[in-house]
Structure formats: structure tokens, C-alpha cells
Image (cartoon, rainbow over all chains, first blue to last red; front, side, top):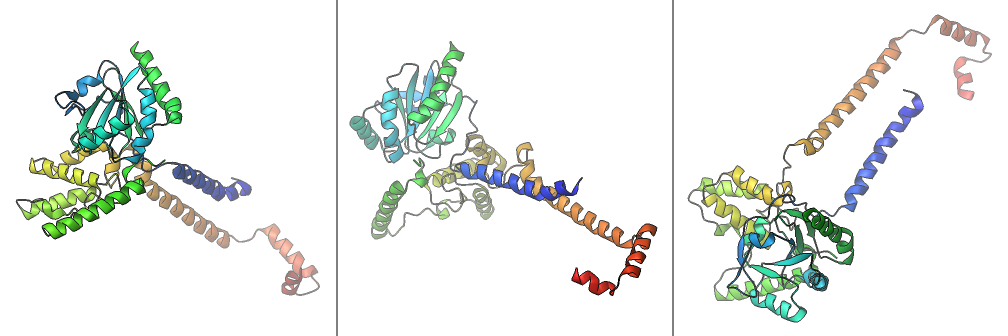
Length: 180
Length: 178
């Protein structure tokens, strides 16, 4: 090896470390990847928030594409995404299923009365019984579930126009094409 | 916008204030406080209690990621502690409980990353680096030693002699002045 190339080696190693550091800084450590991607939704059954006589379960997530949205009345970011969900609820390619997480039913119902109800149905999970099995660790989180009840994607944080257009909408379109 | 529980300072503040208020009320009312403690978990034997504490110390709280389940005051941590407690009382082994949580929350829930191909670099990288450094050091030292031991060749000897003979000054002063 010639002298000049050997001289460059530390510089190259340093450059590689800098690149690694920059990549590391760009990642959000609070977004933990879900191990549930590609797996069937965990079996569950919860009372429906607006109609406690009814139940919501894994069977309700089969037969069509679902966005399962984890939310709570105490969660500010959930209010922020509420309008986006209201707009999405007008679309017919998928249903939005709520998982009302660690919340109080009265508070949750008040939010739906005040800001509208984008959910086809809402599982009421005040004690994190079902959330635990879904690996939920904050709100809002949104799971994309395909027609066969398999979790295909998890979005952590509120849904906005950018995330919808760049990530979720293409995925829903792809799932629709797969199912057709 | 930061979406999560712990990153929402507004919520956290109002929750902190709420829980402080609740704590004060409870303190007045019954003499207890609202902070989570491990004392509420009752065990049949001290060994079981030790095992429980060891287990939750191995697990990470996903909301406050630099805290273990044993030390975190986050509500989610309490949920998971309750679940671990429930599973232990149901007679499940440490490994079963860890697997249960990893299946749902991923390897990240473990403080020690498991040994598998994607973490080989993490586990063995430092040793590889030490090995490379050691190799370079040994090689450099050996090369220096060899160079010092080598006698100068015949042609070099002649050149040296010529330089010394032709130099008007002493060799040391001439080498210094140039």
C-alpha cells in the first residue's frame, strides 16, 4: 500500500463515523419499531364505546382494510389529528376503528360529541388490557390492518396530510390492489 | 409535533399537577401517597420478590426510555409491572414473561439487546476494533525493531564515507545549519 493511501485511512474511518452519527441523529428514538408488522391482529373483544352492549373484536377487522387508531381524550396530539380522521372517514376504501386507550368513557364520548365521530366503531380499553397486546405505548398510534386481519404498518404519532399522502394512502391503495 | 405521552409537556404538567393534587388529597384523607411503589406487589416468598425485582430491572419503560420498569413512574410502566406481576403469580417463568413482552414491544423492551445477527456488530464490534488496534501496534513495533537492527548496505556505507570526507565543517554543525 502506498504511503499516501495509508495516510488517508484515519480520515476515511472518521468520515464513516460522522456519517453514522448523522444518520443516528436523524432518527427519532421514541419511535420504536413494532414487532407485530406482518402478524395477525391479537385476538380481542372490547365493549363498544358508544354502545356498550355491542362488542368490538378482531373479527371486525377482517373483510376490509382498517385503520386502527389508538386515541384518548387526554391526548392533545389526538385532538390535533381528529380533523384529519374526520376527513378520512368520508373515504370508502377502509374503515377507521378506534381504540379508546386508558381513557374515561364520559370524557371520550364528550370529545366525539364535540368534534365529530370518525370511527366506524370504538373499542373501549380503559385499563390497557388490549393495548398491551398491540404493543401500544403512547397515543396516538395508528395500525394499518389488511383485509385478512394482518397488521401491515404502524404509524406512531398523529396523522397529518403529509403522512397520509406519502405513506398511508399508497399503502391502502396497495392493499386494495392486493385484495382485488 | 411530538406525539407521545412523555413528550407532551402540557399533558405531563397537567397530569403532574393532577396527581400532586390527588396525592395531597390522599395524604389528608388516608395517609397514603399516589406515587407508584413496588411495595404494593405482595409475594409468598422473598425469593419470588427478588426474582420480580430482577425481572423488571431487565425491562425498559418505553415511555421514558432511559428508565427500567423497576424505576419508572410512568403509567405505562405500572401497567407493565402489573402484567409481569400477574404472569409471575400465574406461575410463568422469567423467559416466558420476557418473550411475551418482546413479542409485543420488540427487543427494545429489553435493556440488554439479544445476541442475533443484526446485533453482532454491536456485541463484537468493540472486540474487533481492539483486535485491529492491537495488530497495528504490534506490527508497528516489530517494523521499527527490524529497521533498527538492519545494518546499512555497502553502497550506503560508501555514500556516508564520501559525505564525511568532503564536508568542510563537522557533520553535526552542517546538518544543523541546513
